[in-house]
Length: 430
Image 1 (tube, one colour):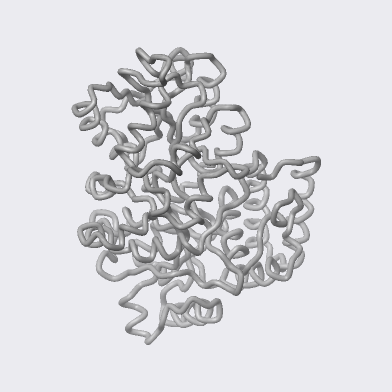
Image 2 (cartoon, one colour; image 1 turned 180 degrees about the vertical axis):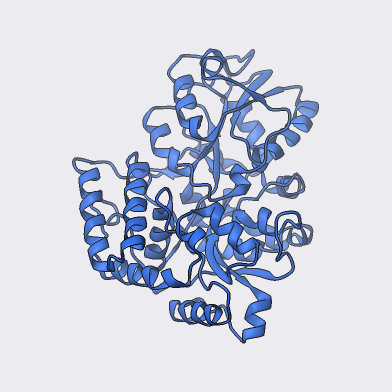
């Protein structure tokens, strides 16, 4: 999935990281000098250009100094990340030792045998301290109950709002849909767009599904491969989503995460529901006109609702001959005591609860309390190989509905039918 949802995860380049072609990745090797114990004097890490990858590279320099282990980074474009990881994993001894990946890639990577089970490592490591995360965040890195990664970043959807406009208009960002709709109307009446949710044909489906999950619905019935877009919760969410269309700027209606972020950062929108990772853009004086006039809080959430979790994961290659050294690096870079350094290097952190006790971290990233709270109310879309096809289908249907005025019930019926077709014959849905 290339959702363009999080500039933390997509925007900045990785200075000095080697960029390679598909052929070079296939011919590369991991675990230089590895012995039978799973240790090595060098490891290879697959990353995709992002602030997270940049931070890992900076931290790796210290790891090399302290351990003598050489760390080589291979930068892979986001849209090639899954295919190049899978290509390396198919050739014995040629896979990566450490792999950065996005959560929608998890099912395909696990099914192809590209990722190692690291559950025992995460549970037993005092340095990593899995208990420092909420169960929702730990679950985010599991496939079918097994941990194949750890969170490199945690980026739930939250409510972003203009503090200056809300103060001027006497509005409160209460976590209810009634409040969100009323505030959208008040903002619209004041001359600024009241909603920033995308309807675009490429990734609008993610934001539509976010509304469905916030209303207590889901894409699939829990524990099954059965589509669940024919529920009262999904209908209420879709009615609300379409009701907000006339308070949404045209650029946002036709776009996705980047367009939503630009509209908000340029002062065109008063509120939106979007991933926390966009803080690096909206809080940047060089990219934003509202640096001192915005905040985040929990999104509107009906009883039984949850917000969607996104964010980078990182794990160990199943084919790696240096899995012990690979884990040593992950403990070093992402252990409980490494978070301040990670933040200093410009990365969005995973939602460790201990960060709420770290004054330096709170000053560097003021949204941390909202991040941790939202993550504890979070869940993820099903880890299924059909998800990219489903998102594309839902996005196209949503975009068409926005253009031709299709009502919520008709839109949902078409979506349910389309997802049923895509999921026909599926048996394992995580």
